[in-house]
Image (cartoon, rainbow, N blue to C red; front, top):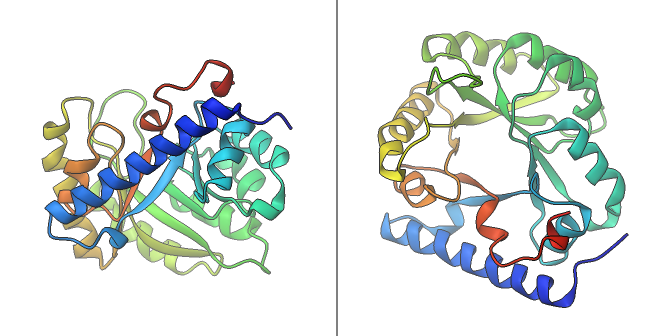
Length: 235
């Protein structure tokens, strides 16, 4: 498999170090322990050489939002690098069987039918699949997730499935300035607390500081890692 060139690899290492420092500063500014905030690095913008370089730099949690791209990356990357794949986009039920035993976590559970399919198709020798219920924060076209009033029923149904472990909520705020996302992140935290869920997957490159201040336990970042990399590194 093709590997990143030395300059791209060095730049990626710098970007990853800066990102981790940025997360730590945001946590400390919010009076939180930086260890409370996990990082999922989004690989949808690049190919297997990029994903492999992240793993070799110690970043095991990789996020994808397209099933086909996830499968191609997983096939190309040696198993000994032990990637933990996170699916962060909307997952269609008819594709659940393709990823049920591949994923470490799903950040976008939005229906009991999908939950049942994933649990049914999950290899019973594996730990239960970690799932985040997706809270719909916007009615913008293309957005998914359940409305807040629906989450209790979805949580109860998903918790009854042996192949799943419901760990938290995920929310994607409407497009806008980072500060505009603050009330939406507060909604995610409040809803998670009401449901007794500890994990909150929220915040990306532009708004991760706001998300961490409002209680994010996982941020999903892609663009910040690509700064200064060549076009070849993105393919």
